[in-house]
Length: 355
Image (tube, rainbow, N blue to C red; front, side):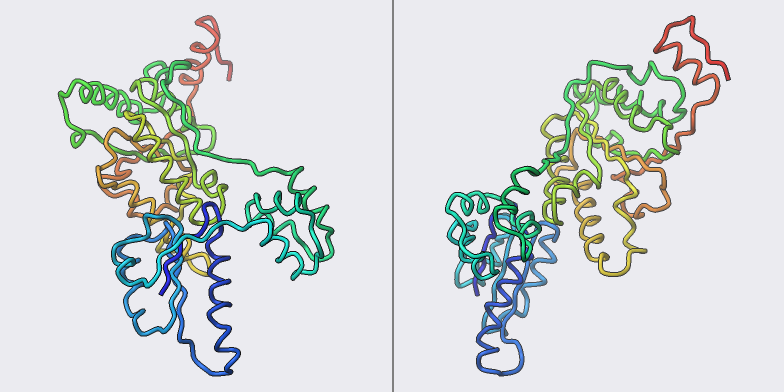
């Protein structure tokens, strides 16, 4: 049994396919039936409990490869079971040259092979198509460098209106002003973190001001603002990359606490009770990881999560339970008086809204 750490930023599923092909080769050569091997993939989308469950029963297999995406997944249980624990190095230029020959690309210059070895393997597999010259592959990758989409953080909100400057928002505004007072008392140690609301859900039609509310709330609370969404985290790559970005957002907020973590398009995470089909496992792992982040070992002290959505009915009920996003405020479109106040704030007291 071998436990192997795959290279950073690689697609662990590629290594899983390679391991299965390798372990299946002796069976093909001997033309015997049955599988005496197992390939287990442990990425950051799985909790430690599910990891332990997957390791049970592996003693019945003659050959086992366990692939992990991070050192955190090398648990004590896994180290006890494994005959070998190692780290897989990233592909070298020589590996690229050998693979290219087997794929029918012919010989590759050393400088091109070195460049291709430095690329993300997922991008490389998209660029290398049968019949496309290797020079064209290199050119495409060089002209279209990867766009790194990371969680954005705005620290020390100083520009723009505070919540008390804004009109409208109803009960949500009252809650936000109370939160500002609570966080001030927290700094003075007059209250504990357990006494403060840790999350709310804002819902309303597009253009109702949910994002503006979060920014103004951060200014009123003299807190950092960290912004994220399912879409921005997913843009990082496969499941493991998305979960890393999600956890990085929570870590960033904890690092700069007190902080407001604003998660836009909160309904994009889905509902485990309704997801079906090939993507159901993916959605469940994402929601489970979000639940773990919302709970946190330290109750994410100093981090208030504000989720925003146009479709609150599509959100998993577990995300809205006490201790998570337990308060729900509906933000309506501004009425005539609110619009008038908005114009006055931004354009001066002589401005009037004409409806």
